[in-house]
Image 1: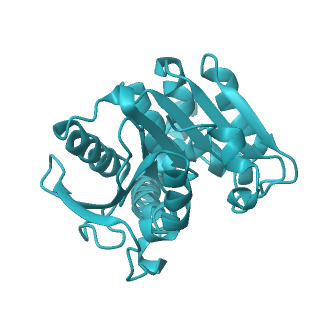
Image 2: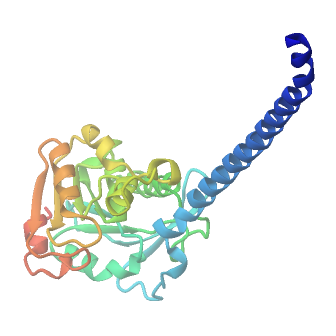
Length: 285
C-alpha cells in the first residue's frame, strides 16, 4: 500500500518541481533585467554628470578681451585651446589661472589687471567647451591636456616652472593641483578647493556611490602627497558650495601648506576683500 501511495503522489511532486523551475527561470530573467536597468542608469548618470560639473552650455562668454592678448595653441590630442595673457614685466613671475566651472576667462580680466599691477604676468587658460576654445565636451583628462598645452606654450617661450605660479579657483583647483603634482610650477594657490568631486557629492547626498557614478573625480586629496611646492589654501568659513572643512583637509594634506581662513567668506565673494590679494600673494617679484 505504501508503495502504491508513493506512485500516486509522484505526478504532484513533478508538477511542483516544474513550477519551481519555471519560477526560477522567471526570477532569473527579472534579475537580469534589473541588472541591465541598473547598468543603463549608472551609465546615464555617469554621462549626464558632466553637464553638472561642466555647465559650459549655460555660461555666456563676454566678447571683449580687454587689455589682454588673445592666444591660441593646440593640446596634444589636437584640441584648440585659447587663453588670454597679460605678459609679465621683466623678471616677474607668471600666474597661470584656472577658473571655476561657471565662468569663462573674460570674467577674470579685472583680477588679471590687479595681478599685473602687483608685478605678475597672468595667463587665463580657457577650457575646451568653454568660451572660444574648441567645442569638444569638457572632461577631467581633457582639461589636464588643455593645462599642459598652456604650460608647454610658456615653456617654449623660455618661461620655466620656476617662474610659474599655478592658481585654481573652485573647479580649477583640481587642475592646478594636478599640474603642481607634475612639477609644472613653483608655487600653488588654491581658492575654495574641494577634496574630490565624489566627496563633494556625498557631502550633500550621503551613501550615493559617487565614485562609480561620476566620470570625473578631480581627486586633489589623493595627489596632495605629490605636491612639494609652497602652497596657499584660501577658503571662506561660510562657503555654501564647498564646505570649509574641505579646504582645511587639503591644507593639512599638502606638506607646509598655509591656510588663509576668510571669516564669513562665501564661495563667490572672496575676491571682494580689500586685503585678499595682499594676504595671498604679497609682492610678485
